[in-house]
Each structure stands twice: as structure tokens, then as C-alpha cells.
Figure 1 (spheres, rainbow, N blue to C red):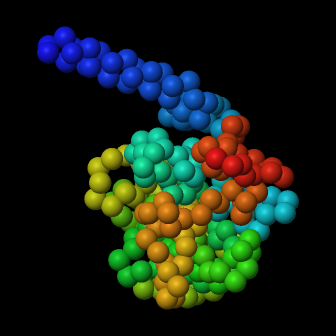
Figure 2 (cartoon, rainbow, N blue to C red):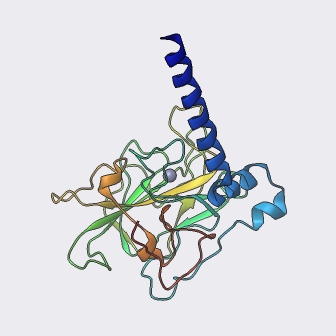
Length: 238
Ligand SMILES: [Zn+2]
């Protein structure tokens, strides 16, 4: 009985070791380490700068930075069962410095209690005409919850139309009451409509859409190999 238990524990240990090695050998994880531990030059090498739309793509990247966590990403704090619902664009500087722009034309809403987030209604999905989608931008506040959102979008603002490229605010590291350091970044996701004039829960992966074809970049964890950049073929069959 004890032998079976020991063998079981050993198998779990070997499995965990291989998982760890697998994660470290993954180029996406290597880049994450480089961003975390690297010097200024190493960090700069990871940054995607793309202020124009990619050829053929409807959206513009909402912020420049290191696109470190991708759509469908199962790495911590996410998992295979609950993967990342959007993309995380990490900023090289301090909170409140890197600008965030509207990815597309649409109507901005900021719920009364939102310190760091905005959501933008796009009434006609450019890639699936006829359906409404919502663009969610989060973490635009400092750790204490001081907002970096532009004054044009105060809490409670609803359905304020802005064109693509409008300055919305600046990236931050606000994470609610959590003490976990999330580094300065923008979380950007495309959220499905609830069919009743509202958006679905943006925390549920099933309620979100792969942003790759909208941005013209390969941003799905299962597809991406290199650092994100404009590509004519941004999607794959995961
Ligand atoms: Zn995120």
C-alpha cells in the first residue's frame, strides 16, 4: 500500500517537473521571463509598436507594449478550463504613462463603480455584419484605484460615441482589492452582446471572441509563435 502511494507521489513529481520544464521551454514563457527580469534593451525588443491599422484589419491595437498574455492563454493565473479572455499589453514605464486608444468606432460606457475600465459598444461587427460586439479595456488606474481614464469618460457615462483612435486613458496596475502585482498593462477583449442591449460577462471565456482577425495579428495562444506583428494570415485552427 505504501509502495503504491510512493510510486503515485513520484509520478506526480515527475509530471510537475515536466510541466515546469515545458513551460520554461515555451518561447512565450521565455519572453515573459525576459520582460520580468530583463534590462531596458531586452524589454524594448519585446514591444509591439503599431499605431496604424494592420493591412486589411478593422481595429487598431489599443496600446503599444509587450503583448505578453494572449487570447486563450492557459498560463497562470489562467488555466486550460478558464483561459485568458483577451490580450494583455504590458507597458515598459510606470503606471499612468502609456496611452490607450479606442480600437474602433463605438459608444463608450463606464459603469458607476468602475475605476479602471471602459466598455465600448460596436453596433455592427465589421467581421460579422449584423451582430453587436463590445470592446473591454481594463486596468487604467493605479494600485490604489486612482483612475487614469480621460475626464471625458466619468463614472456613469453611457453610450458616448468616439471614433477609432480616441485617447481613452493610460495603462495602470489596478487589480481591485487583490494584493497580487499584475504589472502595468492593458487588458483588452472583445465581448459578445447579450441580445438585450447589454454585454455578457467578460470574465467568461465563452463570451469572448479571438481578437486576431480584428487586429490583423496572430494573438491566439494556440497559434502565435513569434512576437505579434501584422500578418496577412492571423488565425489558425487550434
Ligand atoms: Zn488580461
